[in-house]
Image 1: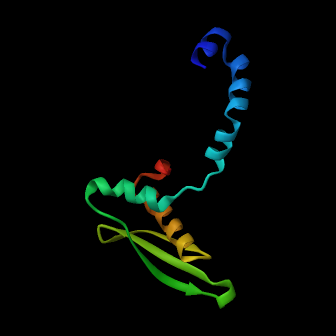
Image 2: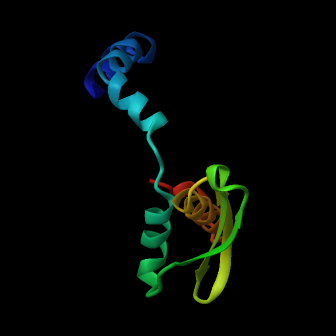
Image 3: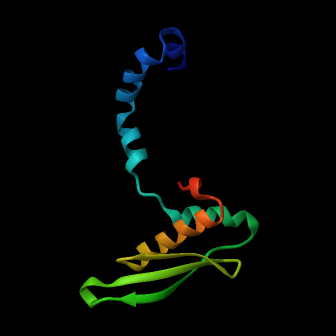
Length: 107
């Protein structure tokens, strides 16, 4: 690809590259980001791990909303809400990553 790019230029090569890798590009753009794993990987080198806590439930049983918090080093770093506990933890982890300055590191 690099040799073709250098020989023929971006405008000529780009459509073929996009076509060849379309499936992988679509996956990369739309794939689920696991913020909990990303947060755990971010704080692990510092010798700590995130601790999640369910802090609220609202609504009737068929339409429940959950709120979770995540603490790092004993300090709450994120809070999130979702229609499942896992979704609320993902939202909390996303907020914590942002608070810790790792917002762009999600995998």
